[in-house]
Image (tube, rainbow, N blue to C red; front, side, top):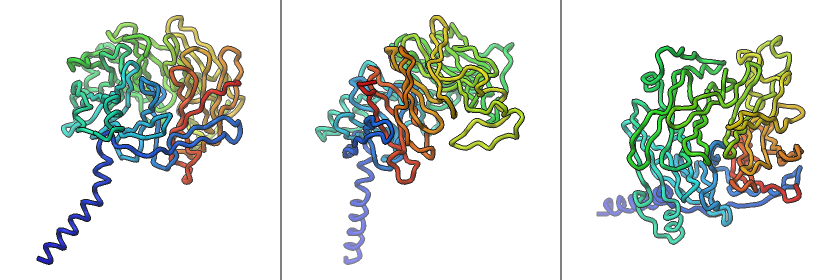
Length: 440
């Protein structure tokens, strides 16, 4: 009897220890606010850190929406609950878990309703397209009346393993369908046999084709082919203002022979978004308004790089290998470029006087502001009307796990970044908001 009682006591203790871990895996679990505001040590602007502990946070990529439809929450990735997505309320700072069972690839927020879309990998290797009713979830989480995840989730359909290529997914402006990458085997079924398939390009051995994009109808789950191309596809994104308009890239991990592309959902209109030369290193395109896409034309390499030995790359100075070709120097125009989807006109809005040049770029939908970071993790704000450029914030540490990836909110009044400024290990990042200063 005594042994039995001891065993029961041990079991009870183990259950008590496991309860927090089990609870934290449930959708809707809340975490206390970590919000704090500090002044940028160089510029004096407010840096509003919505998370401030070393939990491995990272924001959604600039190609996709960051804020929920009501403008109050930002969805992000974190190791607070490994493999799950979280949302932080910009006003209260409270954090809520918004997925359960994991997600794969891109987190995609609706512009029209409080809903999050993503892909989730199944045991058989298929991917299911899931959405979460964030409005209902946040309300139940606040009232402490959480229900099973099926109450909040909608399963829209399944992408077979035989055709899927990860969770690089984007939501159409009409929010009736999503677009996603397909693998080489599937793309080869749809590409014209007369088209020459591209080999790998650059030192990372990426970029080989074929690749392509498919769509899924969110109501029926029906999958349709959009386009097949002779190269590796990456960064699938949509125009949030124009239904059926897709922007994507030739992904090599660096310079591409032709980086930016656009196509309509029926496969028509396939063309380079910006036709580049071998001397231009184009990267990090992001749709910023109904008619415009921001992108970086890099100026990070020495003009005499071809006569020098191949340089060793690092997180602070990547992309220096000679095998990238004769691109990325300042012999040609470089900087934060914005191309018009309708007229195809391109304008360079600004460039840093030295260093790597602007790298990850974005802009406000009203056409007033552009923003970019550089290799030093410094952020620059550009007034597109006056062409004035100022340092917005710095000190985000070159040792950080990733780059700031600045992204405007839909109103053009604030910018979200990810930053290691507060991290003792100089790597772990937090979610940070920088309001555009009123006096700027």
